[in-house]
Amino acid sequence: MGVCSHLGILRVISPAVISGMMLGGCVSNYSPGTDLQAVVATKDSSLSPNYTDKGLIPAGYGSMKQEDIALHVSNAGVMVRFVPLDESVIRVLLPDSYRSLHDLKDSYAKRISQAGRRYGSLHPSVWYISFFGIDADSRFAPQDVTVSSAGRDFRAFDFIPLTTGFGDQRVRQRETHSAIYIFDGAVLTSQPLTVSYQGVKTDSWDAILQQIERERAMILARASKANTQ
Image 1 (cartoon, rainbow, N blue to C red):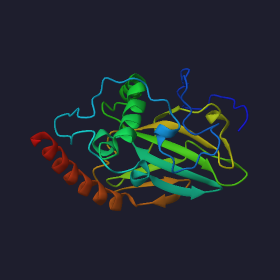
Image 2 (tube, one colour; image 1 turned 120 degrees about the horizontal axis):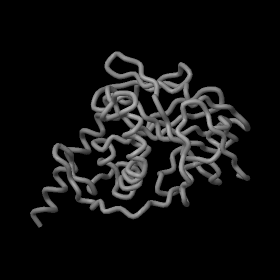
Image 3 (tube, rainbow, N blue to C red; image 1 turned 45 degrees about the horizontal axis):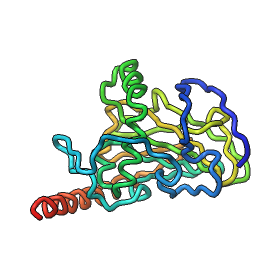
Image 4 (cartoon, rainbow, N blue to C red; image 1 turned 135 degrees about the vertical axis):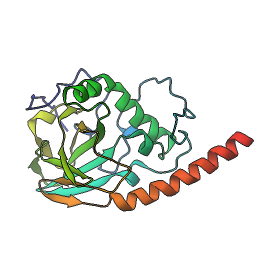
């Protein structure tokens, strides 16, 4: 895709050097439905696939793909893809997809925590959001992303660019730029919500939640069977 450049933009946390990690931008032949593990080098993790936390389904038994939990909005030649990084959601994914997203969030845990404290949110809602170029050359506005939850509209109070050139706010055809977005913890992925980009909305999360709930039940059954063998 050529050489990308990085410019800082308002309310962006400047990224540290990301060794071997290019989540979309400057990756040839990337499509918006590509799972993260196909374009990111996953770091070593002490996390076991069977690692569990109180109140969460066990990890490593999911069968859903990242695209199954993604929300999409298209406007002005750009497709915006929203993927929540809530642990209770990503555990329904296939093991490789789960580990990729878990490790991605874990890699920036300190920055996420710092941003949350600055804005008074101890447990912020974290999303992986990407901008995919549909037209030959389009501009995107990273700050024009909104999540509506429980009757309130939320804009990200910080975001962490993951691709070099994100700050240019321009995406070429079939090119992707992405970032981790940090919202107030009042955004509840356990409830129906709406995401929007420059006024274009989708409320398909309600249907996705139903799939997630079915998958959670199946995961518990799989885990129970595995533990009795």
